[in-house]
Image (cartoon, rainbow, N blue to C red; front, top):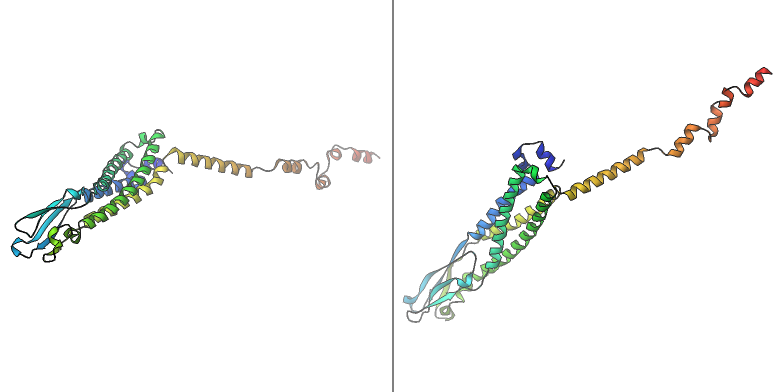
Length: 283
């Protein structure tokens, strides 16, 4: 029984108990987690510059960065350890394209899965009125599956690069004062990555959900139904062919005109109507 037939015999919200509706709900929930953990991220790292002249040292310089990770725009003031002058230092790298691409896919996936769930619940009849609705749903599901795989892979690579670019040991190399052996530079603490790591996990989980839902959406399309009808008709035709008895064998058995046993075991019409038998009796 297809999902449409099952829903017709169940309540309106019972579609959420079927794989098609249940997975759609998981899709928009996981999409929220994906773009929230990535788009809402902000981190901070701290480094220290201990100048030979202690009065010019800065032992806790905070460097803040956030989504969309245009690190080349992030700057901080570091002591030059020469007089009272400070140097303005910029981080290196721009990873906004991968981060924004990932968040955009997550937002659009959330919107589509939410709209699809509403259609499944309240407009199920219109969804199955013609072949166009399930076909569009199928194509969009395939496209989002591919986009989730691409965006999650790109964002995982970009996140790895962001971790390197914001590593306190790497940031120290950008400070001119740290290149002088008489000055000592050290990292106070680095950024926390649990939120961004979670966003990558949710990205690949979304890919698994959308890819797994392809089969259930495909079952609602005319392609699957047409293939099922064709296979069912072929099986019925084949079963009907085997159920028929061969015509020649049946005709020979019933007539008995070509069977020697039939002629010997059954009296002929000629003897029944009284041909030679009646003549012998008269004799």
